[in-house]
Amino acid sequence: MTPRRRLAGIGAFTLTSALLLSACGGGSGDDPEAANEGPSTGIVTVSNGEPQNPLIPTMTNETYGSKVISNIFAGLVYYDAEGQVHNEMAESIESEDNQTWTITLKDGWTFTDGTPVTAQSYVDAWNYGAKLSNKQNLSYFFEPIEGFSYDKDSELTGLTVVSDTEFTVKLNQPESDFPMRLGYAAFMPLPESFFDDPKAAGETPVGNGPYKVETWEHNSLIELRPNEDYKGERTVQNGGVDLMAYTEEDTAYNDLLGGSLDIVTNVPSSSFATFEDELGERAVNQPSAVIQVINVPEYVKEFQGEAGTLRREAISMAIDRDQITETIYNGSRTPATDFTSPVIDGWTEELPGNEVLKYDAAAAKKLWDEAEAMDPVGADFTLQIASNADSDHQTWVDAVCNNVRSALEIGCEFDPYPTFDEFLDARDNDAISGIFRGGWQADYPAMSNFLGPIYGTGAGSNDMGYSNKEFDAKLKEGNGAETPEQAIEAYKEAQTILLEDMPGIPLWYQNVTAGYSEAVDNVVFGWDSDPLLYQVTKSE
Image (cartoon, rainbow, N blue to C red):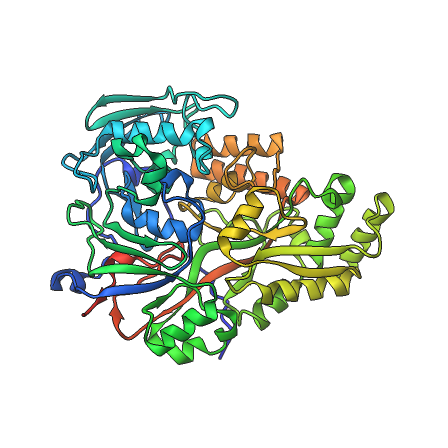
């Protein structure tokens, strides 16, 4: 089978706030014939894992939980399969200056407990997510709104309820792409019952999306069933979805081949060379807004100071990305040349300073030796690369370690955590002793989403503790730019700072490699690598 290099040639998504100024109709990515036939009644089974946290939108920043949140909540907008933006609950999102936004809601929406979804539902939810003492993972996303604080509990003074169906949002500066972000989990509404007992609500969430949670058997199964009162365009075409918690991707893929699983969202590397032949037209291998990196915690002393920066660069240049993506991933990964994704508008491989992402064993060894001369770690030093063992990461970590041992003449080994949630907990608690995997799946289709949430000071997914005021300033400049072109230039400059500091080491861009059974139809994987579950059809 010919290796595929499909990411580099993909066209960029063009997304502007103009798409959001009035209600959008059609173009949702649904299959027209399936819609005309009416919904099917079968339960679709999908590979997943145990969410790390309670099912609260502003607490969910990992893939297993987000598959639930994105289907049980509906926001102001949603993203179709191509990454285009459509109004969902919003009737209109308007601004004359890109700083004060007036948001008008469609009337008649309810939560699954029967209570209405109002402007207050959004304002209360956003304030809860932003409040420092609530310690929500996605609080960073409210930073642009007036009143946000990293230092103390503070109301978002930029939010004002005008009526049940209207509220305004005042930002700290004009940001033209603000409406594009509003389909992300951070900006979902919450019912009044949530605030009575957030802990209980995280276990049995009350949403307003196309599905509702029927049961959650921890470490085993999450049953999603159609929400009959949902009023949006993401009309459910099946009898429900069962998200199955797997701890081994090979097991999930074998269940797919055996007919006991309908959709596998990530084919294991052991099957990359064969899955397209085995599944035929049911194989999925397409570009997506996903990047894999290795993140370097600031608290690890070997990577601090000037010597630490040299070691980061040395490790990066010791990795033969071309060889790994071809031999392990059969071309379904593409070596990274920046921190974003080729499927996002503004991406370029011509980024100043990105030579540090190119394989050069001799240069890598020279950098490591320079670091040793400054601040030695000793010949017995062993680099630890941590990740979860319930997904297929050891194969590439072993390959990277082979590169590192050969080029730098040091030890290197995989530091496994049994499950994804255990790995995330260790990462969040600064308990990892070395460096760690840090894959990123975009929340919304913009360059800034690959930068700010991960590397911005205090950001919820900045698990390295990285902070650079110059980088933060460039992000702010990009977010407040008057034109998309100016924003892109600022984001490029922000990335050159990352290439100097190397808080993360970009590895490769990731295709979504997935598959589905003969029992289901209308299976579409979107721009962000997730399947659009609501449009999958399955007979009893």
